[in-house]
Image 1 (cartoon, rainbow, N blue to C red):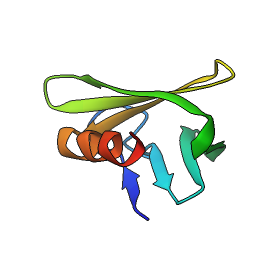
Image 2: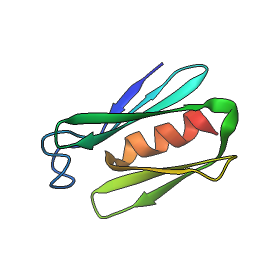
Image 3: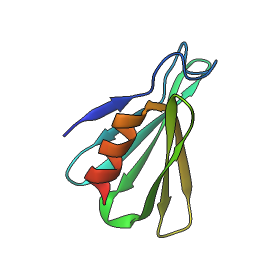
Image 4: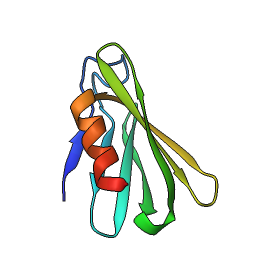
Length: 90
């Protein structure tokens, strides 16, 4: 399944370490940039309560909410990638 990488020009944080979302049959893995690499969050697909896109002028943010109430926000994806993530997860 696909991996989506945020656009480097979408924010100052994404320039060096862009956010990533990796979608597999069983899990969605979210990689959030830190100054020295990434932190990762693995969410089983059957635990995803909702997926939404917050469109900006040029880019889109993807918001995942789990059944347990955890909210994960990935910033700076191309709008077409955001729509594709939404289609794959809904």
